[in-house]
Image (cartoon, rainbow over all chains, first blue to last red; front, top):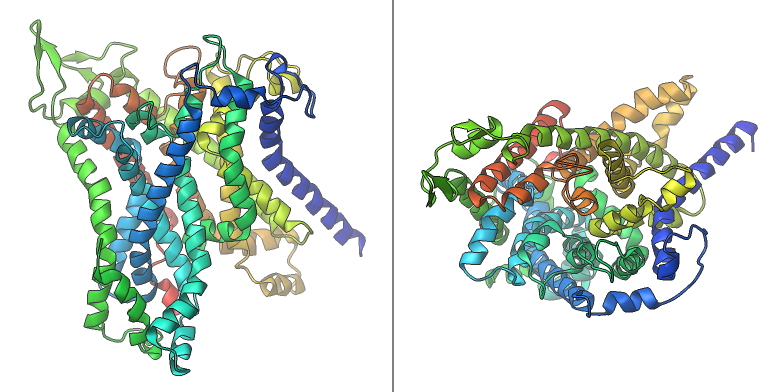
Length: 279
Length: 335
């Protein structure tokens, strides 16, 4: 190895360390604080000290008007339903966009693009009144419907990009080798499409899971998702932010996402960048 | 939902002949056209319901008056013409200028703050994201770890990010401790704005970096090798190969992020409630819309309409002048 290439690789590794610390340090601090005793909230020891599970008990306690456990279920439900609807509707459009040639394709693309740029706040004002008039205010559908506005463009975009990359010739080949249409689709194309669909589902679910603005305006105590529950979390003393409990709540909300991200990282990166760059 | 659609997905590919795809410019198959419209329609109908209808309703509302006091009596609604727009753009409350501290009088200030957040955050993210992407594009061991690390800030819900950084920037928090400072981060205009910018940059730089990285990976090593053989320096290679070739990816990343920051709500709302110390120091357009819903839905609808016109205006300028093609429409066929 020459001096210059050794220097370059040292510089690369320094950069790599900085990037990893960038991603991990604040996250690490949240977890360390989540396990720290309330009395030692502002302890600045870099490793876990005064370790306790009390904060997690506080998070799930309901005696101070917090409904975190319920909020978790709400988020799973809202995110799940939104994802299923988004995927079911989006998959057909994505197939057409990736595989078929038809007039008005660019117009449809422009509509989807415009929809993905649409500011969520512009939905809140008209929907707030409408949902109150028809008695939907605070219901699950009051959040699921507006959530579709950003989940659907996302699923169409991502699925289109995945479908474009698929080797559709294989289906033809299977037909030539004597497979029926159904066999060619279910045995060859469906398994090939599955990873892209799963990735899209994860991206859609994360987007819905993280939504705050619409939920903060249109949910009730019973239907509020975790993002709203965390933002409104109240501690034992008024005007004192219960940091350790909030960090514990943040940890609970984030861990499932982190696990998904770790399991599917390569595909998620593909999915995230597919709509943007490969076009 | 649509009984025909699943079947047509299953059978459609088998029916088509392979060569047709490559034969650019051939006439359109009417069956293919009908099938495409059938496949596309559920999504179009859904978007018309969840976006189209609210937009039309918001525009209609924006021309209606909110309940207000006239000659000592409460007056219900009625057609208001452009009054709600005058309220924001000209800061007129009825026939007089809006008093200081009212939502109407803060419109241009809030537009300024929103643009300030947008320009500063996106600029920092562009520089940092480019640097991250260059590093991740190099050769090193442990790519999986790096990829996982950059995805963490992206995956954490913004509401949690806000609470996490609210804690990090708290008076007794780690930032003041590390720098030996005694700053009340959320009690001062510029301190609060900085804290919000840092939090947003932390959360979204990885996304920017990944988009730019994907662009970098499309550049073939041969181009660099050829330039090296021709004696181009590293700096020259960066400016005359990397930058122009990665530009399309960067422009798309910039577009996405700019539109995101223009719509920013979660971070400033949860961290500061839109104020810091006093007033609207960290109020973005989205926060102002929500605040206004307490005064009247119709004037809030006018403001949300203005907001989405601003967002689309910026998107239009981007696409027009920087040539962002986030569409990925037909050029693919040329490959």
